[in-house]
Amino acid sequence: MTSLNYKLFQRSLELIPGGVNSPVRAFKSVGGTPIFFKRGEGAYVWDVDNKSYIDYVGSWGPLILGHAHPAVIKNVQNKIKDGLTFGAPTEAEFEMAELLCKLVPSIEQVRLVSSGTEATMSAIRLARGYTGRNRIIKFEGCYHGHEDALLVKAGSGALTLGHPSSAGVSEEVSNGTVVLNYNDIEEAEKIFSKVGREIAAVIVEPIAGNMNLVAPRPKFLSALRELCTKYGSVLIFDEVMTGFRVGLDCAQGLYNIKPDLTTLGKVIGGGMPMAAFGGQREIMQFLAPVGPVYQAGTLSGNPIAVCAGLATLQMIQTPGFYKKLIDSTQKLIDGLSNIANKYKVPFSAQAIGGMFGLYFHRKIPSSYTEVTECDTESFNRFFHAMLEGGIYFAPSSFEAGFVSAAHSDIEISKTLQIAEKIFSTWEK
Ligand SMILES: *Cc1c(COP(=O)(O)O)cnc(C)c1O
Image 1 (cartoon, protein in one colour):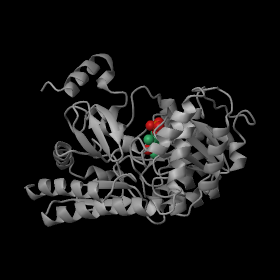
Image 2: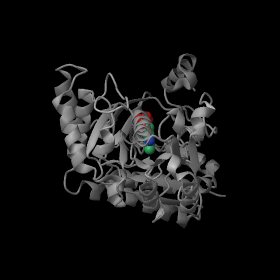
Image 3: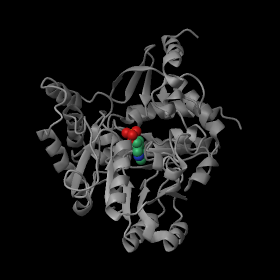
């Protein structure tokens, strides 16, 4: 194999650990050579060898409008002429804050940062500063970025690599983190009844999207809300993935539960490095410069990133935007499930808003343990066959997939055609 792609990867391996700048890009769990992309437009991406793919990764979530959406590109191009950064307040940041406070039910004040990791790291510090407590509760398989205290039994790339936590995280730090089973209300009640008054925060993905897709059981999130209220702990919804992905009022709107703090990222940056955390005014007032909890960033609220985000948030407010997105995603999921069923392939799938999960198992999983019961071999085979057919799914069975507004019936039908070819010759 002497494709440009292959050569680039071999050379990258010499200079970049694993040849990639974020582990899950490396195709480690599915095997093979990661694809180097050079261009995207709408639902499509092109690799360096000019092969095109229908993209269901969308840069891992941000590209809800599809690649290179004209409104986003134009806003960025207009803004970029005035300079890239000032390290001082700009009007665009105020507009972004105003929009987030208006759209996200629980956010009264918000601060902008440059990545989801920074958002969750800052939210945890703020919760500790506000409560004067140390312990954090997280759930197995949930990924909250690579902040030390949260890299315990984390999802996404951390799962793919097969070490549930990371080397280099000191025990003093990880000891403060209690890891519980997602969707297990009884376990959460038990730990609160023991050490509830020591718990600074519960951080949870309201829909888990970093261990494939796992939906919250009906009472799970409301039970966490009640426990946090009762014991004075801060409830943090990590909506870096679900924020504006599952609806205009995010997962908290979908399930009608107000967390104390919310972290956002991905969609709100429109493809640029931008994220945020926000919530109750009383808690947010603990942040520097008004409060004692330090948090800062040279490029926080970067005007170009904010402009890409503003253009994106503008578009998703168009009437009917989510209806179309949800319909497309559901069509994909129903189509794949029907085809698998027709050829008796053990497979199930579900969609929530514009995100979806594919499972090589007859039953849709509801915890990390159940996710690990899915057949990874089958997934890897499916992944490579689809890739060959020009369909790009996330290169790991521990990731959720994403549909964008640019995916029309044409792309969904093409995807289902390829899937039918694969499943029709799928013997066990
Ligand atoms: C992607 C993600 C993060 C981390 O965001 P980065 O921008 O990659 O640092 C945190 N939490 C959740 C739920 C995510 O999906």
